[in-house]
Length: 300
Image 1 (cartoon, one colour):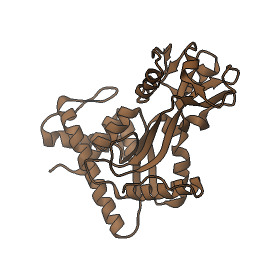
Image 2 (image 1 turned 90 degrees about the horizontal axis):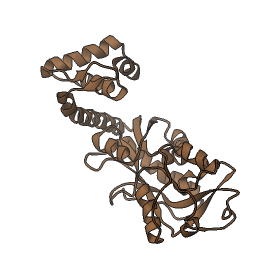
Image 3 (image 1 turned 90 degrees about the vertical axis):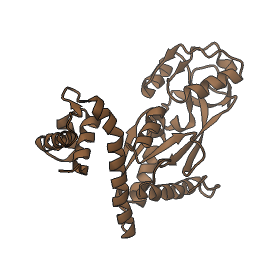
Image 4 (image 1 turned 120 degrees about the horizontal axis):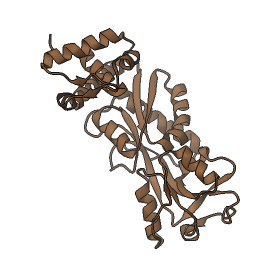
């Protein structure tokens, strides 16, 4: 029997979920059906693709097959969606990847708009750091992503996201309209080691300061809690504002810098048609939000 998409879909589900039981739940199949599909794929390839452990892991061959399986399924989804689009009945599932701050501060309101504006399109959100998000978009795990400062290309700029100082309300500078990073030199500095660290390092360098964080905290909620507890201060982007509790303030920072948040599809293969629909809808969303201000940047 030749290779088929159900075999590849089962293999990828086991890899992505870490086990046959979880893959069965993800696919809406029985565990035995998933096991049979993977086993038949391995028979076709005459070698095992998975190490049956907890969690399941790919063999050397499985690791080589993995990106091609993702590409094949991404292409199949695109073909299926093109047929849907040709029938003038836009529907389907779009997997959207974004970083934690974007997922928490920007994506919820966008999802609400899409649910009302494009009810036949289902959006599933994947959260990861900047490198993971770009990787998922590149290898087909995600159909679309909100990228930070991507190279020029098609997409919709969702925000020009400026960096801000996060301070407790009882901090001596909390009442200022703007904060100079040099005035925070004596405060313990906290940082989230993600794609924004290089930009925050640049802010310090431009101000002639040494960049020497006291703590590196990956989780955003933990970072905010540590500022609340008076352990130090940090720099976050404006998109984080909705997450800031009442006892903290988020103030414009000098020297100022920002990042572009761009909704886009993959660069190396055709976009899932529903991604273009969501991008067009995002333009409408931003225009409504701006209430007559200049329309968002679009390069479709």
